[in-house]
Image (cartoon, rainbow, N blue to C red):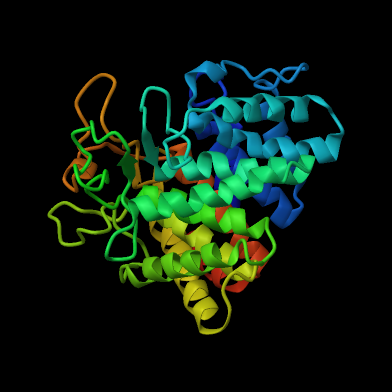
Length: 379
């Protein structure tokens, strides 16, 4: 089965991640479907998106199971589909729903430096995940409504988050605790202990998506330079297999493994940076090569036959910091190797869709078709 057929089958069988409640896990699939439609023009991707999302967006714009008082930054991500659907359909419920989400952001608690808390239940904390969940949506909302002050705020939050989470190796740790109350938080810096692959994936995608929406000017140039440096640092850490490790700052750690969702996110960010002109010249060549190698590796080795079908394997199911119940997640390199590894999780499938769509838009079809033909030959 080639990737297009896999995506179609996956969406036909997809069940909402949290029983139908508005959530970021579904949003990963929605984002993938939106980009596949943009890339190919194939109406089935839009049909899947409308079918899956319509049950969660009421006629009055209310979102199923959504409680703004949770101040959960994850819940904002799915809102990115509201803008293309509003433009295409003219249905007012989509922008009404977007206003519900931006209403949460207007009241969302922040650390003293200005960044949104990750969640109400994770107070005073900034996680890299949250940058992807909220800031590209915030910029898209600003562009749709003309509320340009939201763009400056988003750029400021990116800059601050990068400063608070940076490492000597040029990558970024998973989280920062302003209060220093969490056991995972360094008492001097507030940083968590390790560089988790998917956290870097959320960060890379957030930066590239945000900058693709904005012109190059004095306001965005520093962030563009920092993003290029991050993407090149990621490319340097690509394994010979074409994939990337679960714990990025401990490559020799016993049990460290190459993880699929982060690899898909890095492929997407690399190819999108090339396609949108964020990188040029030798940098673009390096990132294009890394992206193509990574995508071919994911398609060729992680889409595997299981139980009479095809599954996307090697996905870390979930990882976080601290806890509100259950075992404490201390954020050490060893911790990230304890979480379950699963197949077909939306946090991996969605980014794989996104990466595949970017490859089509960048016109890397020839190299992709070689892998697809090889897969067809072994099936």
